[in-house]
Length: 490
RNA sequence: CGGGGCGUAGCACAGCCUGGUAGUGCGCACGGUUUGGGACCGUGAGGUCGCAAGUUCGAAUCUUGCCGCCCCGACCA
Image (cartoon, rainbow, N blue to C red; front, side):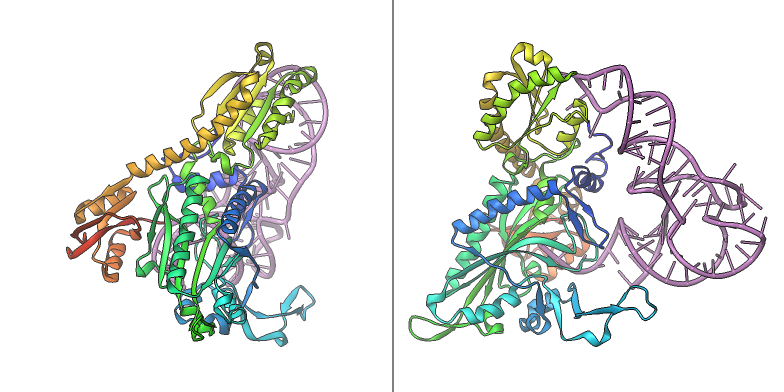
C-alpha cells in the first residue's frame, strides 16, 4: 500500500499531482509555471524521445536546431498565427543588466533596449520558414523533412506538471513539399506515427481525427490530432499534426521552380508531441498504489530485491542472482539489483510500486532453499513463485504480456466510457459523468461554442474512420453527416 | 484580470483570537534492537516566524504597506 497517496476516486487531480511528485518524476520549480523534470521522469521522456526519433528517421526525417528567439517581425508575418499566439508570448526587450545605483543587486540597463523585441518561441514556424526561404529554390530541394527537439514557452495562466507548463519540451517537425497532396499525405502520415507510438509504446489507445475549425492550430488549414481518454473521463490531446497549406510559404515568400519552370509557393506541414505525453502516460494507467508503466517505456523494467539478515546471506543470494542479471541484460532488459541495505525490503516493495517498475523479483533465504524466486507484476499486483532456471524466460514473456495487457485494459476502459447519445438531455447528463460522447453536430462554430458554454464540453475531433451516418445535430436538430467526439478536455 | 486562501525547520502543519522561553509529525544525523509488504527505542542537529515600517517595556501574535505562492474562473499543446 502506498502511504498516503490520495485515491483516484476521491480526488483525481490531487492523486495526479502527488503521483508526479512521489514517483520522482517532476516538481514545481521556483520559477512560476515551470517544472523541474527529475532524473526518473526524464529517463521516461528519454525513452519516448528515442522511440519517436527512430520513427521520424524511419520516415525520412532529419534533425536540426533553430533559434530560441524569434524576432517580432517574423512572428507577425503570418497573421492568423501571430494572433493565435500573441497572448502567451514571453518577450525579450533588453540585452544587458547593470548594478543598481544603491549598490544592491541588478537592474535592467535602460540603455540596452533592443531595436526589435525577440519573442521566445511558442512554436517555430516563423523562424523556420524564414530560414527555408534560403534553402528552397527548386523542386529538387523538396521535400524538406526536418524535425527539431526543443523547448518552447507559452505563458499559461494556470499550469500543471507535464499537462500544461509555461516552458515545455517537445519535438516539432516542419516539412516543405512541392504539392498539396504530398503535404496532406505527410501530415496524415505523421499522425499515424503518433498513433502508432501512443498505442504500441505508451499503451494508450487513441482516436485519430481532425479538429473542428475552432480548435484548429493558428495558421493551419487542417489540424489532425490524436485524442486519449484519461481515467477520470476527461480527454487529453496527445499529439497534433497540421497541414499548413501555403500560408507560411506566402508569408515568408518561399517559392520554388517546378518541373515546368514555373514559380510556386511551397506546401507545409508541422507536427508535434510534448512532455504532455508524460501526463497522458501517468493518467492512463496508474493506480492508487502509484505509477504503472508499460515495459517499453520503463527506465527500470525489472528490479531485484534480496531479502536477508546477514552479509553472508546476502552473498549467497547475490551468487544466485548475478547470473540472472547477466541473462536479463543480455536479452536487452534493464535491470536494477537493489541490495542497498539502507532500506528494508518492505520499503523497497512500496517504493518500486510507486515508481511503476513493471516486474519485481524478490529472493530470500526460503527461496534459496527451494531454488525459487518470487515474481510480482505491477499492473495486476499478482505474485508467483518461479523456479530459478525459469526466471529469465518468465520475465521476458511477462514483459511482453504486460505491454499488451496494459493497452487492452486502457482500451476496454475507453470502450466502456464511449457513449452514443442522440438527445440534448442525455448529452448534458453524460458529459457531466465524463467519457467520450459520440454525437451529431451541425458543423457550425456557433453551435460548438454554445455547447461549450452550456456543458464545458468541446469537440475533441472528427474521427478519421468515423462511420458515415446521417443524423440530427444534438443541439440545433440540423442535418449532420457523421458523429463527432465530444468530451471535457485537459 | 475578477473571486477566495496561504506564507512559521528540508516537507506537512499547530501556535496568532486573548502579545511574554518557537512547537508537533515526517524527514535528517548518531547508537542500539530489527529485517518475506513503507520497523522500533534512545539521543541529537536544524528557525532572520515572507519583507518593511509602526504600536508596545516586549511582536510569529496587533496595525499599515509591499512581495510571493496556491485554489476557483476567462485563455490554452
